[in-house]
Amino acid sequence: MNHFIALKYFSQGEIEKLIDLAIKIKSNRSLYRDSLKGKSIGLIFEKPSLRTKTAFYIGAVQLGAEAIYYTPQEIKIGERESVGDIAGTFSVYLDAVVLRTFSHDTILEFAKLSKIPIVNALSDFFHPSQVLADILTIKEAKGDIKKLKIVYAGDGNNVCNSLIHAFSILGGNLTLSIPKGYGYGLKNKVLAEAKAQAEISGAKISFNPSLSEAAKGADVLYTDVWTSMGKESERKKRKKAFKNFQINDKILKAAKSDCIVMHCLPAHRGEEITDSVIDSKNSAVFKQAENRLHAAKAILVYLLKGNKADK
Image 1 (cartoon, one colour):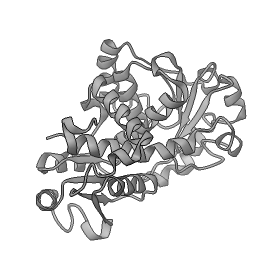
Image 2 (cartoon, helix red, strand yellow):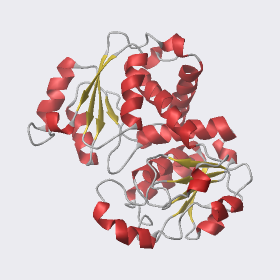
Image 3 (cartoon, helix red, strand yellow):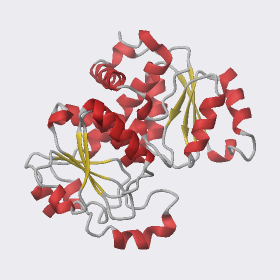
C-alpha cells in the first residue's frame, strides 16, 4: 500500500517523478481533468487550514473526484471512535484519505490500519505536501537545486524537518539558521536519516546560528512562523529567542540580488518576516501557495493511478 506520510519514504527518482507530474498537471490542466473520475477523497482536518484544505479539496474536484471534508467535531479521532474503526470505515467508503492532525503517531497508526492510501496533510513532525510544492517553486524560479544555496531561518518545526528530508534525498545545499534549543537536536532521528541520505546524494545540510552570515550569497531565503499551532503558550518566550532570526531588508540585502523569499503561510508579519520583504519583488510566497494545488494533485494522481499517472 502506497501512502504519502513523509518524504523520507521516497527515493530521489520518486520525488523527481512527483515534481515532474506536478509540472505536467500545472501546464495542461485539461489533460488531467478526468484522471480521478469515480474516485472519492475524504479530508479529515483536526487543525485549521487554508491552503492545504483548499489545495486537496479543489485539487480532487478538478481531477474529477468527489471530495468530502470532515471537521474535528464530526470525527474526534480516538475520542468518539478509535483510529482503527475510523480507518476501517473509510476503507470501504473512500479511495483515499487526506489527514491533518496534531500527532504524527495518529497518521502512522491510521496508515497501518487503512486499506486505502493516506496522505499526510500536516502533523506535528512533518509537512511533506508543503515541501513538495516548495521544491516545485524553487525549480521553476531558480532551476537545479543542486546548484543553489537555500537558507531556512527560524523554528526547527515540521516544515523544517520535511525540508531536511527533501534536500538530503535530492542532493541540495540547505543551511539551517535556528536559535539554540529550537532545532539543533531536530529530534536527532531526522538528522541521522538526512546524514545517511546525504552520503548517497551528495547533499550538504549545515547549521549557522548567525542568519546574517548564513544569508550571504543565498539563492533562496525561507522562513516559517516562530510559534506553530499548539505552541501558543510559548509565544512570548519564542519572540525573544527568535528576535535575531527575522528575514528583513538587511538579511535580504545580504543574499543574491535575485534571491527569492519563501514562506509557507500563514505569516506573522513583523515577527519572522517584515512587510517590506514578503511584499517585495523577491517574494515567491504566493507562487509557492499556488503550487500547493499542483503538488496536491500530483500526490493524489500518483497514489491512485500508480504507473498510469504519467500520461
